[in-house]
Image (cartoon, rainbow, N blue to C red; front, side, top):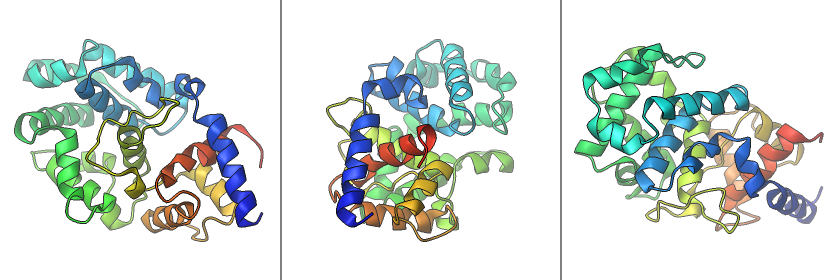
Length: 255
């Protein structure tokens, strides 16, 4: 494909997959259970954290977390006692286990009590250079500033060490982007969607390489930046909207 054909293909797939029907079978369905900003962003962060493996399982586990939080994530995070948090000791999703889950609940509680919430922490890293990489790095530093097990750190990827940080980039897409279809939430007005980095995984990477949008062989942070740079040639104001096209096509159709 030439550039015009690639852009037309991406636009067509974006329109096809950025649709309310997309929500039902995607982890984004978990934060869509709520209407309050804090409930949405907490549910979104936890759902994105669990987002590897089969989507049916991810959604089921996300609903399990919401049930354990009495379907009121912000209220739970704000008021949970040590005993309340201990109810997550039995939670397991792949390598994300009870000890990890309990720490996440505690760290989120401290972030809302001490730092003004998730948006404030991510934004304080983003502010200086409008850098998503710095935003994620800063958040990670704050998130793990409390006593924790070393094993838990792997569940928040570090782009400075080369991780593509797919799940965090997906979470940021959910929070920052807004569009008429109403799939992403567009709650965090302090960020520009032009600065977002495209979530990169096996499916989106495979399609991107076939389209000539990604030359790097490894799905790491450098590859995510390369892909996003090329997507900006088609839409400099909203390059990450094409995540719908790349991921949706990669999962659902034969190239």
